Image (cartoon, rainbow, N blue to C red):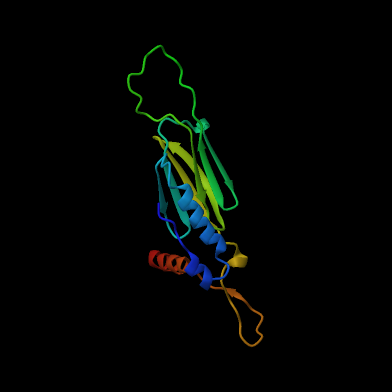
Length: 163
């Protein structure tokens, strides 16, 4: 395993210690088990989707916990009912798991669905109005207006095209 060394970046940046620590911790923690496999997709500017392959798990076997900047997905192994048959080969994983996902500021879990062996978790980034860029007036004018995002301009163009 190669160790990540952020020393040169730590010397020339201020306030990014948490980010570097998080990257180093993730590299150390994720070097082992890759079960269950997952995909992360970006659906638009502020929407994300995590898809985990959890074949054999029921909704009541899965626990999703979201807290500040962390989402934990746990699958609890359940006991199989003994129907009197003898298994000759066990190839379907029936083990518990825990996956941790570090979330950026203002990202929240919007929805979770389990269908066809896939757990789909939708995430949304909602930046508070106080954190959005604002236009600052020069020479003492007191009116402050929000700076329109690229998405708002695109939506205005779409509505104009539709009209």
